[in-house]
Length: 174
Image 1: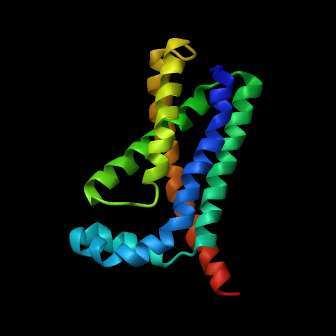
Image 2: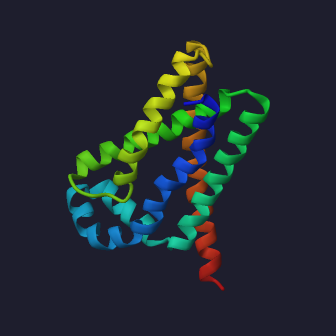
């Protein structure tokens, strides 16, 4: 598969994955909140408390922000033929998928993200291998931009959850 097609697919792959989260997270937390809290008292309480504060609409605002960033970086990478930042975000997304799989293993049953995590995992693996085979980035660039991308994804995730709560507060006050 052409490398540029793999790059163009990232925003689409991201949205396929996040649609599952958007559609199912509210119902899932309602159904699994007690088990989550009893099995994982410290983190379960924080997760359920946070998710109970937000609506699907607010959650979607966060996904839209992430989609916009991924789309802009993807377009700029294709236009400039510079793939460093795109690669960093791709690695951040791929690690995000792996985290969901680990969450599923630990929880031991469906979580709203696992089906699409397994569906997009082959894309992540194939794209990673293709980047290495075509030597698009040196190994040192992959390491540096992979770490930077992971940090950017984590920082943006923190910002997105702040944005989600801010948006939720605004729609609650109207």
